Amino acid sequence: MRVISDPVFAIRCTTRLMDRMRVKPDPIPPPPTTVLGDWYSNVIRIGRTQLILAVSERTLLPVILPAVDAKSLPRRMPEYLFDVLKRLDIPLSTIDRELREMQQSVIAKTASRSVLGILNEFTVALHYRDEVDSLANVALWLAETPCHAGDSSKATFPDRATVAALKESLH
Image (tube, rainbow, N blue to C red):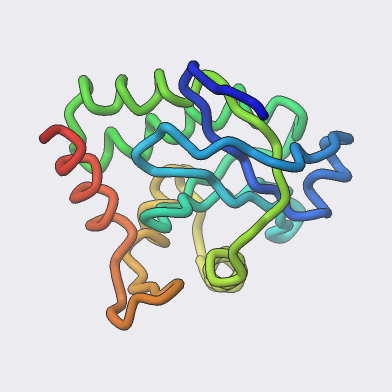
């Protein structure tokens, strides 16, 4: 039995992304200590550009980053998340707390077909986006999409759900 005392979360990768990273998944990832939970990730191609699309398991917030070095995903993802959270007007102290919780990660297999479905829907939507001015702006564009995952009978908006979850974590 593993005991985790440090902050941790899992990057739950598709097989395609794990193959690209050349890593083996942790068979029993620990529960996340982050407010946004684990992150589901896949490598995608938009035209000639390869990107990594990651989605928060708890709020479905998307983050997009270049796929130049997939192995560095755990180290680079917080940087791209920072840009998205900052544009959602999340207080810097709250962002800092979430990013501190993301300093240690494990790679794991995907576990939720619902979240994978959202990841696939976002991928399809990206093919209809005319311009890519910044990855954070494109992620925020996706975050305005009403989503339904899991047992919830109501659609949620990832941007609003993220703001609410991080605000609630302050209490």
